[in-house]
Every structure is written in structure tokens, then in C-alpha cells.
Length: 347
Image (cartoon, rainbow, N blue to C red):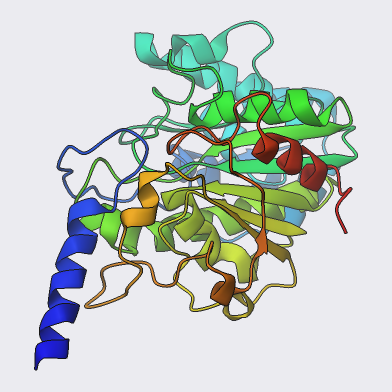
């Protein structure tokens, strides 16, 4: 009975301290944005040149890629003008077409919080204004890159906060820029805020519901990269994002999965993730995530500590990382190691 009581207390502590990147405020439960992009019903009812359009829910990214390969430029632009939100979020559609479609979709919202995403030079690979908003942005040339990395961020991130004014190397876009700068021009990095993240501390941060929904979206996103001929990606998964990656790992073609500042990956050991990717883990000495109890009880908590030797992940040096969000700070050992992993230089 005493042991059971300790388990209850530990689970309660998990609820109290599992959080994302923004702090310690209590969070509310959020509905996960799932399913095909807005406007899909009108898209399914349409056609181009007498051909039916691929169902965003049922068609695979490879089927979408083959469909667009059979269209000329005018037909592609006709679809962009009529269905920008679908084209912009359709995995397997041509990358330049998606960038243009998402710029159109961002401007069409008329919302100031999204306006910067339509600025010159931005390569927005996905944009969904539902809920708090989701976005994916490319840094570098994804069509020509020899290596591709994907940043999967944690709690308190959404389309508006994706590139918010904060320390340059934090937040999804900041992390992606820092990694691209460190890895060099042959590497493209995608900042993928493509799922509904938890807000603050609460059941969402301590539970796996949003991670399960996010994992399905991440798996389809990586399949979309494959469908357009991009190299197999490296996943850099921060905080709650590592929970998403842990659930998604077996369903992606990632070469490496890197968990940083992780509360757990919903697995007892790296081998249980069911992936052939190499699994890495980093945790800085002052990262408060170390205080999160590594348990799973009654659906709460995320399991074993990926940074512990028993988990079996390859260690990433992080002795000079400050806090929970300092892993991509220029000059850190962790960023140098991330760049080497991103470029496939570590065997």
C-alpha cells in the first residue's frame, strides 16, 4: 500500500511539473486540430481538366505527387487560386506551389498575428489557421538539399508564436535558423509547428492525447517530404515535441531522432520506439525537465528518461547548455553536435 501511495504522489507530481517552453502557468485542455485542411469539401467536389482531385484525407502523398506531375502550369495555378489552403497543406504537392499557396492563405486571413509569415523570402510549407494555428517553415533550399532536418517543438508553440520576438535561438523558427547556420548550405531545416501543442502545465502536458494526434500529422508530413524527393530527415524533438517523436518514430523514415530537454518518449528504452533510426538524447545541467518524474500512471507522465544510460540513446554533449531552451545557442557543444548529426557526419 505504501508503494502504491508513492506512485500516486509521483503521478501527481508529473501533472504539476510537466510543461513546455513558456513557464509554469496552469494550462487548459485543448482540442487537437486533426484531419484534412480547411476547404477540403470544396476541393473534393471540384476537378481540373475533367480529372477528379485527390482526396486530402485518403490519397497518399505519393498519389498526390503523381497527380500534380500530370498537370501543366496553368492547371496547377488554377487549383492554387481556387483552393490555397488545400494546396498549401497537401503533402506531396510541389514545394514552390505550396509556398505560394500558403502566402495567399496567410494574407487572406487578414490577421495581424500571421502577417509576418507572408513576408519576402518566407517559405511557408504548411499553414492552418484553425484553433491557435499551425505552421511549417523551410530554411534553406528543400528542393536541392543534400540533408534535411525537422524541428519538432514543445508546448506553448503555435502559428503566432512560431517566430515570436524572443531569444534568437529559441522557438521553432529560431532553432531552425540556428541549426541551418551551423550545418551550412547543403542542409535544409524545417521548423514544424504542425500539431496542437499543450499550453502551460496541465493534463495536456502530462498526457499523450496531443502527442498521439501530433504523431499522425508528423508521420504524414515526413511521407510528404519523401514523396517530393527530399532526403530522409533528422528529427530534432524538443520538450513535449520529443513525446510526439517517440510516438511517431516507427511511422517515419527518419535517419536519426534527437530528443532534447525531454520529459520522456512514451517508451521504456530506445529499442522500444520501433525505429531503425539512431536515437540521441541531450539534457543540459540546468534544464528543469530533469525534475519531471519519469513515470507513466493512469495515462499521465511520459515514461523513462531518454537522457539516462538505461534508456539506450546515444548521448549528445550538453554540459554548456543553459536552461530548457538553450540547446541551439551559438557556440554550444550541443549545437555543434546537432549540426554534425544533421549532416550525417557522425557514425
